[in-house]
Image 1 (cartoon, helix red, strand yellow):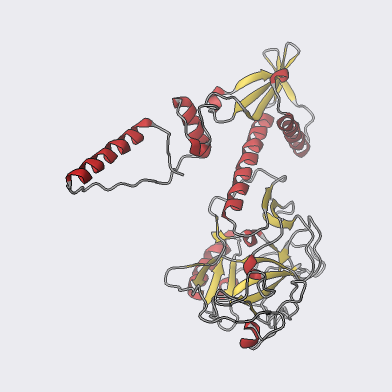
Image 2 (image 1 turned 90 degrees about the horizontal axis):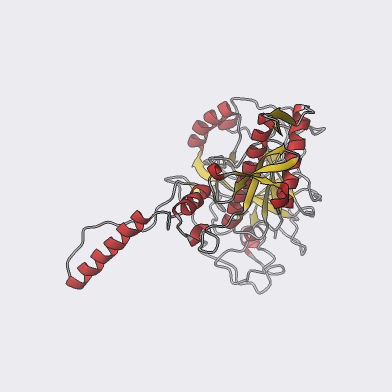
Length: 435
């Protein structure tokens, strides 16, 4: 975000520079000035709003206008006290610094949802701490215990941060399915070092061909000899858009050079996720997970696994670092060779948060659309059975495109051989380890 409107000195300097450029242009003189018209702002959204209100400045980019410059809207409730039989709440005002927090009587508050969240957070904390006492007596005033008040503020800030992260994810995604974020387990906020992407991000030196050179000329790709036939395989989907081929068989979809339209029955993966999914905090110490918010039919496309495409040598180096942290995000692209790996640790989509299970409900398939390089297939995840709304999505981290999980064929790439990570999936068929 550019820090537009958050101070007058920068605007004045830019205005003076614009006048100099205009004068130079009129006189024909050359200018040696270098101007950056927009730079990333390191300040948070809250900080920018607070600065605007403090300096009495407006900025449409961050929602501060003349109409709401002096507005007071409750952002969250920080504390509670009873004084002379009157109930008061400590209010954090939206867009104002915490130094301006004020105690307000209950009758002044018109925020039933925030009041409900306040008491719910209080109940959750007391349940976890197994404490019955809510308030203490201080100077003849009954007030919340400091630890409880601190927790309520942290929970409120977390809720705001997760909501903004959710909005950011939905701005960046390029598919129809909505993304939701939920944490009712702990105080963990959005991941700090994660960047949402919609497709592979090649590491320096790796070239991803983004456009096919040939395409089909079908009028009905479901019945005619289409791209899959040209590649020597069968069409992957039935009339219900469900996958009908066996795991290990590649999917060849119609590409940008094909004459068929967007409604072609051989364009499924490229349309992206169609389901509303929720990134949620798990209660079994598995960190973040993903659950579906709607029913998913069996053999349906759910999502792609994307990340940074790196060489196998780089995967080996990174794998050593990831082992020390106990994380697993490396996915070998070994359809025909073992030259490249997808690393979703920093760059990825919703699949970054999908957990492992030894009895998964998602299956891996290799997909080729515009890029027909067999060393660089796209990785698609399809449902293996009907998945109910609210059910967590999982895939087997050892799963290869062949779907074969025998002890002889388990895919243990060099980056995954060193440290055995204990599996927490809890399924009846659990192998005990992720690798």
